[in-house]
Image (tube, rainbow, N blue to C red; front, top):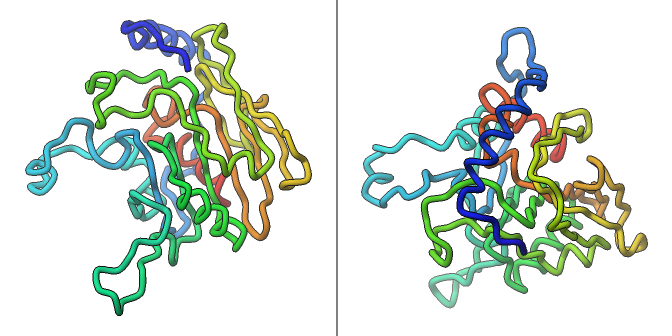
Length: 260
């Protein structure tokens, strides 16, 4: 995956400002409030979406840190269940049943994960085929700025590790390293989806799942068994508040479109 210069964030900031000058505000209802009841959503990610970047454990325990804007936006509509694994966890005692982290979860967002184990791939495929609704965001080249240096385990995965389950669903993700660093906006099931250095999704095996390419090829929607998968090859919406709409409304719209 491409490695960008260290001043990438400064260049992108200027690009965002120019792009926002021509952007229309995200649509809202008359009150600006969400009328639908809270729904539970599982969340696995390497991005600082749930906990603040660089926060220490004692700060988190004391509640002395501000929540990430992404978490605040998501929790306006969903109750988040943070996940570190998708596959069953062995019980602490021999006579106890193993713990299934996906039990009771109907909606799941896996956004730029650190890498799915073979067991995670199997568990995710089984969960989707049984009726789960999944948003899978795999960005070949993140555009956000992060404090942790390259190689630090706290740093988000700069280039997505494409899990084998994507190919099992008949999809492949590629990346054009020569594309321009610019913000473009497309639509995804009626929601506005901003893109920056997006990957491109191809349907490689139409027999594997019932898939349709969306968002100018940066996304795909697949019917897999009884479940539904939305794959997006760009994470800019989850990195830049300037692109997420007022109060993260555009982010919530994309989540709703993917998980409806």
